[in-house]
Length: 93
Image 1: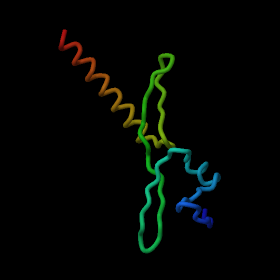
Image 2 (image 1 turned 180 degrees about the vertical axis):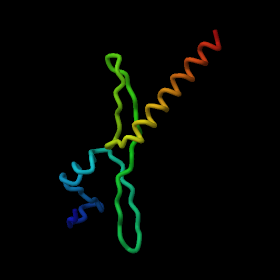
Image 3 (image 1 turned 45 degrees about the horizontal axis):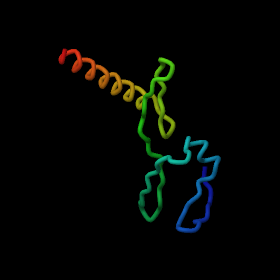
Image 4 (image 1 turned 30 degrees about the horizontal axis):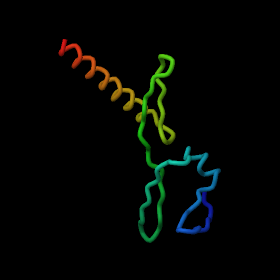
């Protein structure tokens, strides 16, 4: 997909809705800007992954669409953190 847009006031770029939807971007999404060969390249960056417990079930929240690898990594990190808390609390008793 290729489009032409105009730079707005204060140098702002507006990403059209169809592209935002296609890439899973929303307000607060992170974008990486690079200049390569005289061209500006923009790529979505993964935001932080947060796991909350609601009604006893884990809910995964992130700033962008997640790939399976990032979900798996977030679950493992959350599990490791819980295991560390449990082992430290059982060692102190």
